Amino acid sequence: MRSQSDVVIVGGGIIGSSIAYRLASEGMGVTVLERDSVGSHASGFALGLLNPTNATGELERLVHQSHGIHLELHGRLQEESGVDLQLQTMPHIELALAESEVPELKSECERISRLPGFKTAWLEPEDAWKLEPRITRDLFGAVLVEDVIMLDSYNLTLATAQAAEALGVEIVLAEATEIHYEKDRVVGVRVGQNRIDCDAVVLALGPWSGAAGVWLDVDIPIVPQKGEIARVEGLDPVLGLHVHGPCSVVQKADGLTWLAATRKDNTGFDVTPSNEALETLSERGMRMLPELDSHRLVLQTACMRPVTPDGFPIIGRVPGQEGMFIATGTGGQGIVLAPAIGKAISDLVTAGETEIDIGRFGLERFA
Image 1: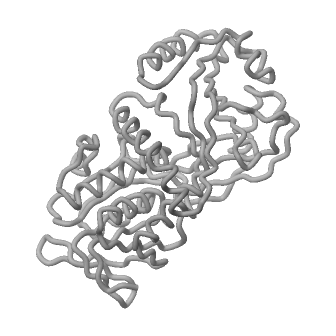
Image 2: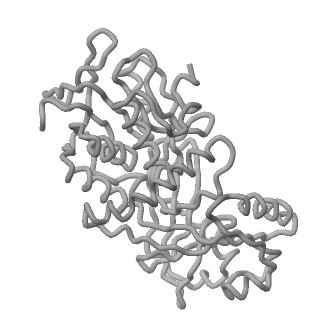
Image 3: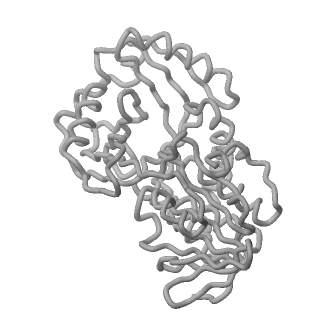
């Protein structure tokens, strides 16, 4: 382990790895501290859907900026790391399973049609069944979006980390225990009996970010939200689109059909897969694609997402502490937002400002 680094990043998930990759691309010396292993939590278990058309409100611009960076990075990351991202491009279809849902979904179709770079159409039930005959007959219409991207979130995280290592980033499987300051400036990070001297620290601890508040003497309002996904045997013929309604159903490059995802608060850090979540996902999935009733469960996963009281991420400087930055609170959007967050934090560290739209997502809003 190095005793000195320009920047120390605490956390090696997709957010920390993306920041490390971007900083290293700018010539910075970077050390990443990861207590467990890269992609071993939410970053490795996420669905991996990139569909910026579903972003609205305050997150819309940030999501679209991040999507653009995703498109620029995928080929480069695969080449630099040798890791297959298992990229798939497919149609997305949003089902109206009740007549009352039709007006809102038609309004969504109109909104998406105004977005540059995306094609959308309203489908009557007969049109949806032509596209995928296995969709439920209890259908009142659907929104079609062409095309969205599906990838493997673990492979994306691994590829980003390995590409960062190829640029000189050191990834250390160890736990940070203390931040060192001189007056109000960060000067180092304690790791066991060792210390890494540095000019900047980035906290990218995901659902564990709240505990880092003791280092900063600042409240970081992050709590874990449990999310579960079920993977069942693949459909034959292959399901060639992403179906969404009460949940997501998609057949990924691994051949399995994924049902995603549940959300449950107030569970602490329990990542034990539950029968309750499996029953919920099964019932929701079969409501859209009744054929799933005959498909055997292969794997059920559970992880913790970092969520804030207002549902928006925390990105930027830590007020009053020079050289300290934070990137967390992405909820279920970590994979989607990681490239933009990586660039934004890298810009702030190296240039003091960024064109990425993070102005409203600072920690100071919770002061």
